[in-house]
Length: 330
Image (cartoon, rainbow, N blue to C red):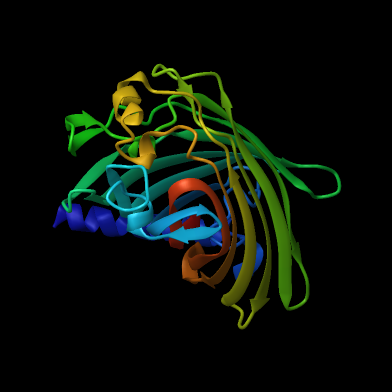
């Protein structure tokens, strides 16, 4: 009974603080939930957040062309003994923001990642591999120029594991690059963006990049990433806004290679062990909803689908990405 009473008291206290702290009154004061680091807070204000992200990948592609399994496998016209057929990536992201001043907000992001991939073999078999662990934690500073443009700069730390193993046709082996959790390197995060309010709508943009600093302990460096997005949000009530967002994403190939995957790469076991088959470009469209609830709670969702993909393949193509989020300032 005492524990229940204490929990209720903490909840009421947080809600009271949130109601007092959250001076933003519009649902689209925050960008679509798929945009990271999009706003500042008032001095002394905190914000906690949680994001659930689910990405689905199904089928292979080389360049802009879809590939059948037979075009990947040795038993058909391909070169590989194994072909990935589909993959689910789930991420749970905890976030915390704090503003030591009105023009500086600090942000920490802590991800937990789960990967699951299905495969078929040239001999007609099938198997599954999975991996999960804490991902790379990032710390980012957010501020704005005198014209209101928001900038961000920070570091991602190599807290995620890149030694994930599972049962494969080669035994209990180190998993391919796409199934590893972390980059193994310190990574520079930089970005620019704006979220501009109008009478009944808002629009904004963000350019954000992740650039690898050095080589990890397994002798390779993941490719850099660049993400450019622009959105339009329409307020349909005082608490709900609907948004549409366009996204361009670039990911580079890896530099170097993991020596533990050398044999699998030499015999062309599976495309996912090749560091030169990691690059991709995508153009996506996303639809989203922001809901400003009582006591400073914010709930949001966004569903993102590719309309164009160009992959260094064979490589699994992306089918869709769902993001659900909760935020509360206090």
